[in-house]
Image 1: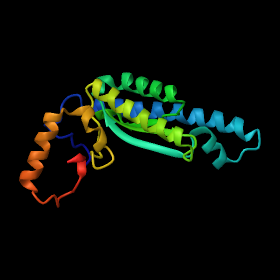
Image 2 (image 1 turned 90 degrees about the vertical axis):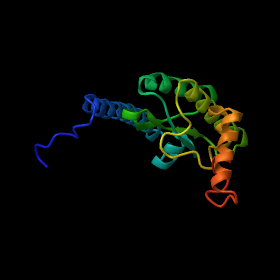
Image 3 (image 1 turned 135 degrees about the vertical axis):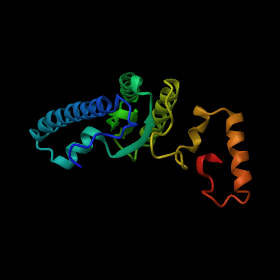
Image 4 (image 1 turned 180 degrees about the vertical axis):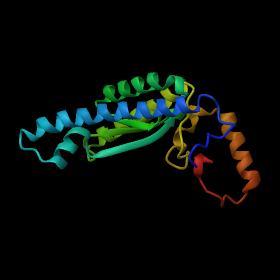
Length: 185
């Protein structure tokens, strides 16, 4: 293996993209750890234990989604996602695969038993989806639409496109036995 080159068909930007992704992840992780250390440290001074400190910082419910944006829009996307979080009063840690624009977005709801907070958390997710699609991105980076994102398909697709999807599904699966109800089809 030693001395082998990357695949001859790999584009010239392969290694720079890998290094950019690595640097982006390291930068994001270091910012995250710095904030956790600072916040937990000040909470520990008041006698709060680590599990309680975590809940105080990030909440008791994580609404996590994966989205994807063009790589060139990644900084803009992150800024916008954080602003949506601020609008609703949520921390929104993001991480992912910067090399391909895939971001794992985590809307952290403080109190999962508070119906208003949960409702606002879901509104934030929907706004994030709309924002990402407006930037030329997609509702899912790697995990697919499934059933959880089915209600948001209207953000990315017109009714004509959804009808086309339904007709293709019906042609190949008239009894709806293959992944029933996935993608809202």
